[in-house]
Length: 266
Length: 336
Image (tube, rainbow over all chains, first blue to last red; front, top):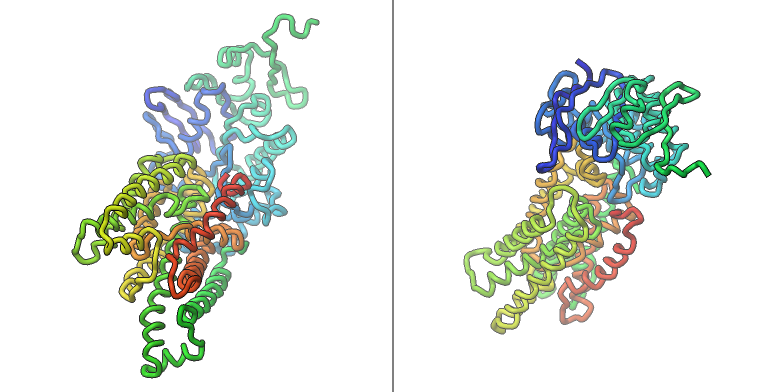
């Protein structure tokens, strides 16, 4: 039994089936990248893993116990989610945002204890956000905001962190910094990571395992070499790609090919 | 911006409480008949010195000042909670149409001549609750709230209620007219101690209840799904808070009539100075709201003395330009 077990999960919005019979497991300390085309059900799967949506059929088990048996607070002490966009209705400083992460550990009327403040401090040191502590969250850049929200997730002291399209709005420098950081979290702190990603090459480079979704079903799961193949990608994305190896790390690498016959021949 | 430590909260609340006491003393002294501060002290001590001043200060001004404080406290705190719940810096009982719904309830009670005890405040209260139910069903409270839909809902409800209210205002008899106008513009001139003893427990207990949800409100300001991920039972919390602020708003409006914009101006001023952590914001907004309305009401009864303005005229005069200001600041982190 792994840390997260997805057992025959199906989900539909109204009559439209989004996920059917999803079955996989994420081991303790695992680092799973979920890839697949738009509309393949990646984000829905993540929302089911985080308990926002309840599967129509099947169950998600967290450490052997059905997810829905955990109370919200109990689950938030063990699982954190970093979403794609971070709204903040009223001006809060970065530090205030990170402090929110302590909510599931605190009694209703309690104020942050010295330990709570210590956890927050360490989370901000780890994410390199100490210098941003007293700046307004909404005035930060996209990359800075993401680091603050990751600090908030770490302040929850979770065992599992879910990321939804973490690099979608980042430039290449911040993309690589993000994956380096999460890779270290996984290696040094033993955090179990599940990240939905559009970027097949980065996901193949960093994740221990990949899950390829196609039309709401698991098409393939396993190490990058098994998942990212010319055959799989063409079958799922309906586009031919050129496959070779990342010259530095040996992970599979795709190159997109033009549809135009005349392209590149002039 | 101050950190939400217990010591800071006590310090800020203490300072604002002191300010409130000073504003209330000022409000007792100023008026169509002004008295000196020294006389105020003897008045409280001595029964027989000056019976006319005693009546003016203790029987007319004191309950009015206390009620203004309660109303301001309640409206400001409800404004804070509505804004966070609806994730909208412009949400406020008056703008959402809740106040005019209450006024309509009260006016219906007056016009139809309902005569059981507390019929008018009770109907005002019911009118407010029905309006809230309407707002929720029209703007689809579940899930992310659409700002435009919500504000338009308020505008339309206001227009609809006012058309009915105006119908009654034009058709009603002369002697009932003044009672109707009281509800339309908000008037604290009829305050009695009995009103104070009814409303004070509501806003104080309500304030304590809301304070218990301060951290939950912080989470909600980060978005509903994020709040969920941080361990908040989002739907249950939203419903609980909405019912609570609706009840408080209903009680407040049933005592004061429609006093607009207090719930808009005060929360924003306090946020600008002290920040958006609800553990600081809620008590501070309540106390500052009390100061604001006591001052506004003092203005209402002194500016054209010996005549009086309805206090709603003063708050709307200050509030409407403020509303435009907030509207322009949106997108710079305020409700973006």
